[in-house]
Image 1 (tube, helix red, strand yellow):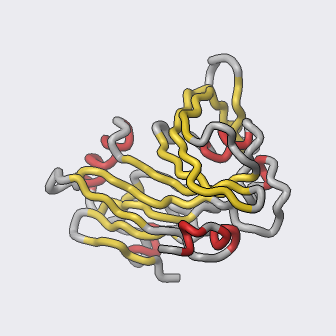
Image 2 (tube, helix red, strand yellow):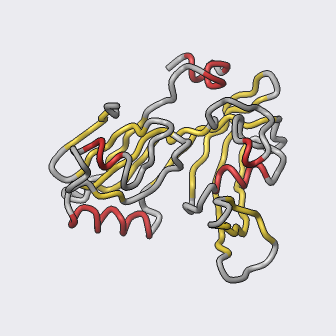
Image 3 (tube, one colour):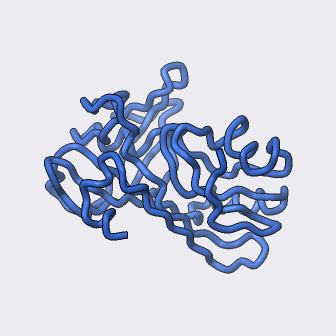
Length: 212
């Protein structure tokens, strides 16, 4: 499998991670560089989710990109198809999340305790059709399964996400990393990369996707 490369230089490689491929060791680094030597993962994407990712090609670039991730200066934008109609067409979701590593599942909880982390995202409903909503999401934090559990906890599971309550089976999770923006680790100039999901599955229902 050859991943689509959006940009590459001696410092970074920006690619489109296919659905079903790990973003970490054993997956994308090996695909990008014949075994993964010299390719550094600086942020993650769920195996079941595809879309735009950036990798570093040297340790210095990896450190600088990782610092941007930690400081929330690496901006991530996602698209999702959720079940139902969200009354507030734009807003912010803020929760406390606990990730159960044994079950590989996250939960919204009421109180802070060991292992509980704050999670926040902004969202905007772009289009509604056939009882589904196409939503644009900008992450403010990067917690495990954050988007999936925050929407599901409010009664809007992502289509195909049976782990978090979707009744649609045998379907890829309708979540896509659509855009990244960050400071290039060598030039410090802000760069942005975008890629829309393929026009298949539930994405094809929406005019915005079809028109790109």
